Length: 397
Image (cartoon, rainbow, N blue to C red; front, side, top):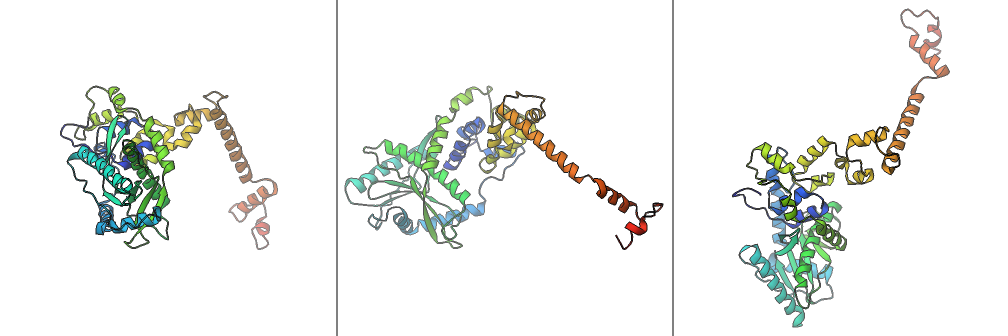
């Protein structure tokens, strides 16, 4: 579906969090499931997106992550010990296993085996050893298709429990960071927690996956790392529920025309027809999470869909799905008066008309004020014969 000789784009936790935030969008589900590069697709459709990180931000983030994990992960483990497990033994001489293996399936199997060994080595033998897994890989089933996820790090505590570590390059100023960026990081970490829970469920006994993850960021305006514990239980529950609601990829693909292809190398008209054959659910929030957001926004506006105004507005309007339907219902030309949405729109239209009428009445001159304004307008004008120029237009005015 992505075209011959077109490499697949891996589905990462950031994309999964965005997909879970909009589970009704079949277009994104099938494109992500097929490994389509949506940035290249958006450019071929004539609606390039600025979504994503700049090369400078990526370079800065990689340099900061290398600094945090330097010296055998000593600083990272110190932050985990300080913020999440201060009663445990200090992480001196931590275990850093090698996770190298061919292919994502091999890395996934190697990560699971390493987690099993590290957990038994910590809790089973009573040695109280810390273990740091640098860029492990897990598989998470998403709508019947496996997604391979790679968190920055996972720490195995001396008691055998597991913690997800997220390393970001945005700063923490006076101990707090941008709430929007922290929220995005929490949703991304929640996906990793879900994948870890599936791995833990296959072990006997199943280790505990901590729902407090460690967010590591630069301190103030320096390059020194600082950290904060973030509880992701709410994000984990929402993500799990939304992912469970996703339509299976096979069901979406079966409903497409035969031979549908999303290769950016296709002619523009064929590519547009292929993309439009899959229904999308656009919302303004897509602008911060999807490469096709500009294309879908243009289509939504052209169709007059109320979803372009936001999910909350769409939910309030019920069966009224287009702007023209809403305006017609407000004017009393369409809709059932017993419908709460229609009744509210008509009441709002009446209140608006009354407010405009009142404002126009207040602006209109009345009584003596009108006469004064008329006299003032005529005073001193050529041809004025009422004799008031000296009275209203002179120094006594």
